Amino acid sequence: MSHAGSESEDGMLSNNQIESPLGEEGNYGGSANGGVALKKGPWTSAEDAVLIEYVKKHGEGNWNAVQKHSGLFRCGKSCRLRWANHLRPNLKKGAFTQEEEQLIIQLHATMGNKWAQMAAHLPGRTDNEIKNYWNTRIKRRQRAGLPLYPPEVSLQAMQESQRCLNNDRIESEHKSQHDTLLSKNYGIPNIMFANLKANQSILPYVPELRDITASSLLMKGVSSSQYGSFMSPIMHRQKRLREETTLLSSFSGGMKNEFHLFDQFHDVNKAAQSFGLPFPFDPDYTTKNPEFFGENHGSHTLANGNFSASKPTAEAVKLELPSLQYSETDLGGRGPSCSPSPLIESVDTFIQSPPTGTVESVCPSPRNSGLLDALLHEAKTLSSAKNQLSEKEFKFIHYYSCECTPISANESSLDESPSAETFTEANVKSEPVDQIWTADRENESSTWLDITFPDALLDSDWLEHDSACGKGQVIVNDAMGTLLGDDLGNEYKQMAAGASVSHGWGHSSCSWDSMPAVYQMYELP
DNA sequence: AATCCGGTCAACCGCACCACG
DNA sequence: CCGTGGTGCGGTTGACCGGAT
Image (cartoon, rainbow, N blue to C red; front, side):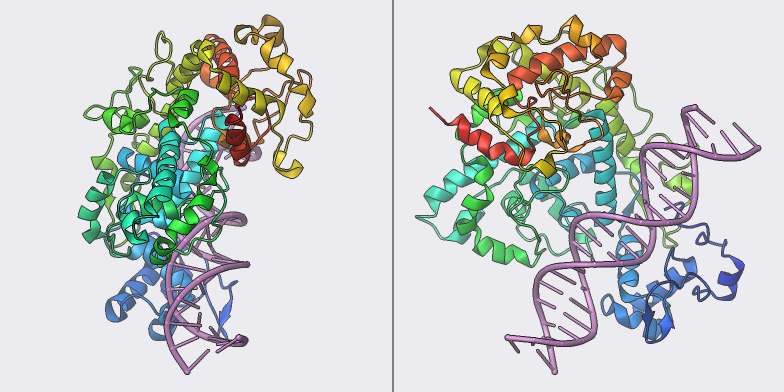
């Protein structure tokens, strides 16, 4: 991008690069190829030109031959990467649009860290871009103690996986595997891909989106991510696009294993209830709620009345110029006059949006976006719904509070986690929800937060266990207080305190991966 | 003005897979 | 079956930048 190297801007080649346009005198610390040291580091415009010329003549592929034929002192991998990420046509540069952000979130909920596959569904975007975006987003959201996915995304994936499980059990007896697959939809509305197919013509680097359905996506994405993907870590190595067929062929047999996470979640509506979502859960909820993900079509006014200076879509999308060396004004993020990019804006929205006004009891959030205000709303909702806990739900919570232990001591990172016996039933029962937050506890300088999604537990930076209290609550770092301010922060504390019991997930150091055990207990009589 | 720090991005590296001989 | 080359993916690193101190 703009800072792709002070050496690489057009017309700004250093002396040695001017003398040696291909950068022969650059950084040659890399591997040698046939005795010729290969350059590393940022690409120069001259090198780009050489590579473009090479591809024009010889086409893509055979990257190791680039050096032979063009004299470019770059290894094949570097050439391929440069071409794929910067030089190939129809690359879309600039900040991600809100639509793209939504798609990324949704895809990641089902795919995990399959950046290349995600890029295949974002026309003109590269896996590297998406990866960088996601990692940045993860850091910010983790710092804020927010869930990675909006509840709808997680729950939708859960519901669809449940549905696919049931379908699989039934249909596998009557239909061929292929037909079964074609009949399913695993979490991502296929309508999403209708548009993508329409854009397929501008995906030169992406295999044909032939009948890519959410089902295939989900199958490819059931593996977990290091950031706490929603899915269980079954499939470690993605076999990429060529795996589509093999996966599909073996789909039926593998389904039960791949989705064991949800095997015990027989009542999705209860799950929705636990998430604070409207129930019976509406699978089309997100499509019926344009505010999903905090999106406001037609206006860039945020739901809280704040305005964003950036424009949502059109100007965020800039086609790359042939030179591929961007002026700052093209970047939407570096230039002095640039408004916050949609990327920043959308994530900031997660953090900055104050809670909406008075919140009633269990009802659909006005903005089930995963944004902070929506989170607060959810917390309030959950808190107000605490009295509606069924016996089963109490068992669920109780189990999680009393029995659940970290997957391993190493993964826990909570070396001082309370022993299981600290999670006594008495702790749960005898302590009314509304009393969890007390002035005394406030004096303990501890801010309680329900970690709605165990993803958040992965961040040890802000996750601490309050050994003094011994109840396994999670302490939010100062970031949340800073974000919310005193009054709002206190309100948030109270809501979070209520939510933590209602929700039942905030009371242990369990990671997301331990959730199947919870679900199993959920089914206990 | 200097320094520090976090965010962003491009590029590199290691690994895995496939094709082919 | 095995070795090798080509390719692609995901994780990581380091440079750059702007804002904060």
